[in-house]
Amino acid sequence: MSANASDERFNRAVTAYLRQEVQAPAAAVSDFLDIIIEDARRLKLDHVLADLERMRSASIQLTTFVKSVTTDGSSARGQAENFEAFQRRLRHDLRSPLNVIKGYSELLIEDMDADNNHPLREDLTKLRDSADQLLAQIDAIVTLTRSDQTPQESRAQQVGCIEDVLRTVQPLQMGSASPETVLSSRVLVVDDNAANRDVLARRLTREGHQVVTTANGASALELVATREFDLVLLDLIMPEMNGFDVLRRLKATEHTSHVPVIVISALDELDSIVRCIESGAEDYLTKPFNPVLLRARINASLEKKRLRDRERKFIQDLEQERQRSQSLLLNILPQIVVDRMRDGEKIIADRIIDATILFCDLVGFTALSQELSADRTIAYLSRIFSAFDRLALEHGVEKIKTIGDAYMVAAGVPGPQADHVLRIVTLAPRMLEMVDVVAKETGLKLQARIGIHTGPIVAGVIGTHKFVYDVWGDTVNTASRMESHSLAGRIQISAATRAALGNRFELEPRGMVDIRGKGMMETYFLKP
Image 1: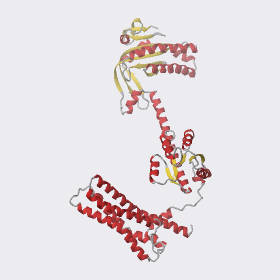
Image 2 (image 1 turned 45 degrees about the horizontal axis):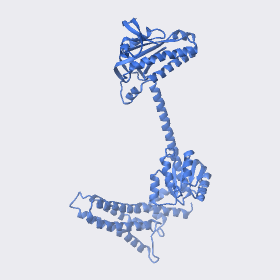
Image 3 (image 1 turned 90 degrees about the horizontal axis):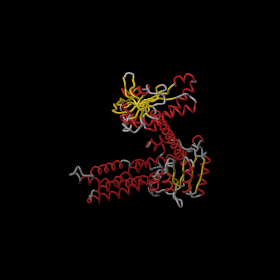
Image 4 (image 1 turned 90 degrees about the vertical axis):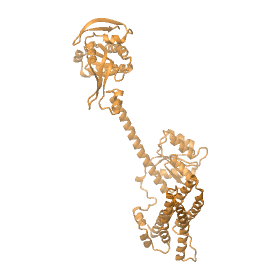
């Protein structure tokens, strides 16, 4: 970098330093004073408004003058005015409005001495302290404005932090952006001016982006709705549909809300910039734009989109895994039980007063499995039990487990069901029919027998690594005995089930059956 360029860069840094140390605090004093005036009006403190308005006038005078001083690091200096006279005038012009603000704030604070709880006292004290701090900066700004007589080394000692920043932040080498830093993406340029579209398209294409251009807002919305874009560069002033309407529609639509939008407009008013940012614009650049700055803003927006896309993909993957885990869990446990476990219940155990249990056994399947290959044995069993699962789901009953070639379901668990007996008894004939269908289609000599009993049970979850929802009690044992003492192709129910069932089905009394461990029990067959 040449000596002149280095000196120019240093002067720009000095100006920035002055804005930071003097202009920003001066603007803060003005803003703070506006707040105090708003509070005084809201509280109807009319007697202090006149002094506050005088302070505001002085504040406007101060900020205007400070801005003129920090625009280029110097102020208007008369041809016949030596530097000492210039410094005295500069100090006077800066101090005069500050002294007005400080003086009136002190007078108002004195008037409030009798009332320590006055609503404006604390804010006025802060305002006075801010004026004091700003007064202390006057000598710094006056000294640093002597750019034509003070050597660069001397000024650098006064604000050493400036050179530290310049050493850390290396100057840009114009036109030397490496291709590796460019994030190639799909960009939509929306501008009614053909020259603007062409310039942007050429620049972006040269940098490796895939560019699509359009001249109006309606076509832009159609393009974004039907094609994938990583970024939209959007003009504001367009006929028929302006850029602000396009921006709001893009952000209001779920499919397009994630696409970043950089507004590029000749409008540089604060209202337009703020409203666009509030409506979801990623950034706002004014025309004519600096191409280096545009490249930096585009790359920053694209990088943020990539990170957001990665986050969305990660969340989608997590949701898919959650749903997969949920599905697997529901294959093991009932939904009600899963919900209770998620709510923090450590032990799931219920005593159920009335439930109905069904056991179904495939008659002769054990002997048949010795004749079949292992894969055919599993295939036939899976086909039958998968059909049973579908039927259980249709009837709203809970599959408990399979035990070898036996299948067990329960109704009235885990939540109560007033019609639990009816559900089981209407399910049973369909299970027999399903076995008959498989036997006919496969040629297997296969039948099923079913036993049903109704009564109280205990239900709950056992295990910590492999959860199992199971049922226990005399009712379960009796239902199992009813199945083992039934006949092939028949459904045997107990007297308890028959009593709960009423007269809704035709039954065939079987008589007294010797149920092992239970003695003689009265049982019935469901008529086909």
